Image 1 (cartoon, rainbow, N blue to C red):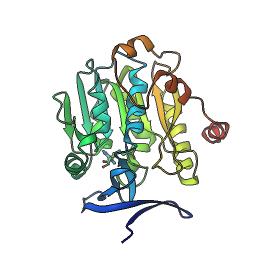
Image 2 (cartoon, helix red, strand yellow):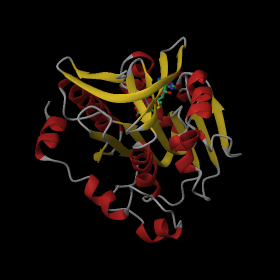
Image 3 (spheres, rainbow, N blue to C red):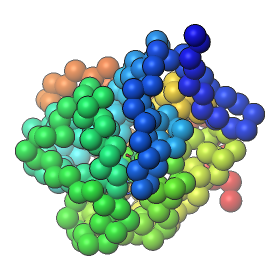
Length: 282
Ligand code: SAM
């Protein structure tokens, strides 16, 4: 029997993956959580029917959310991850010996428990002794923090449901306050392609630009996300992601990465004209 998982990228566009079986379903107080095993992408999971992480392409997303800021400020020691329940972002952070503390604030403990069981590839380093897990809303957590973090990574779902609060001006202001004077913020910045994602991208960009003196956007290819064209935001109080890239120091980490490299770091900030226009379109 033909089994397929289908995600609606828009009301007129569907994305389907042939699956071998569904291995998990639960409904947490926050979202539906489903895990599947597929021919092409290995094991993957969805939240409220939207693909979050697949074994095959997660390396792209987790390389680009972590190594870009780490190549700019080699002094990063204290990091906050908001969301990131699959553990892939934390896995990449723990590869840096200079990092001393990682706080991960994930609203849904069921996501972490399920990923530890069905996606050890990403959840493998959540037990690192530098990692502290907090199962609560990142919107509330950030209000308690002032001038403590070198880096904040907002590894969130889309701006719907529990993730909605992670895209507001108030939240970005609180992130600004939680960062120290050299602080960098990276946020999941949606996509320039389909209308709904483009609107979310534009809103985030305006709010970050109003909050941080340096606020830029970089792109990467993510096969299982709507259109495959996905973005991160780079916002900072001090560092410019290209002028301040510290190549020699980053190379000293001697990390074997499959997507990130210093060339793609520079190239990722070169955006297509239609994306530039969409970002600046008032
Ligand atoms: N890398 C994937 C992506 O960008 O689509 C998803 C990363 S991870 C699965 C996203 C996580 O954000 C989910 O586990 C979700 O529970 C969590 N999340 C959503 N809203 C949150 C909030 N307000 N506070 C903390 N975590 C939240």
